[in-house]
Length: 143
Image 1 (tube, helix red, strand yellow):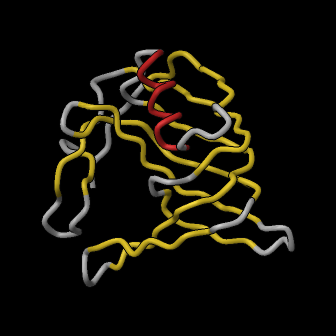
Image 2 (image 1 turned 120 degrees about the horizontal axis):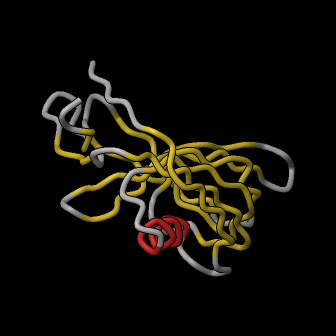
Image 3 (image 1 turned 60 degrees about the horizontal axis):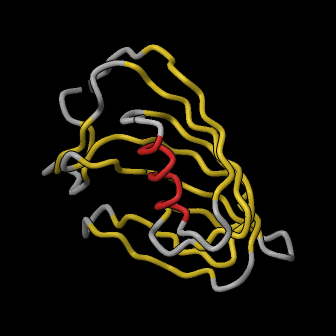
């Protein structure tokens, strides 16, 4: 286990573009405002979604599609750097028209219908990701 302290910086709120890719939209807001490390949360609706579940034994993600309009009940995650570029890591809870929920790791391919994002900047040495042999994941280094 490792930890590092940050101070809170700027807070940016943004409306995500209709038809945009959820992860790309969030990364664009972070990039536009120069946020290299931040925590994020969002609500809204998606036209379609792609989520994933990490198989801890196989060390790989299994993706699944939600090919219907859904409410984005909650999106939690963070912004850090991976290979020097902005990297968004987020998990979402989605609800369909019947109220049934599905959740998982957000994968590329989530199409925004409407979205409201809050980015809270974390001021300090930016968090960077690197491959972790034990988990097979790109985790924060130097913690």
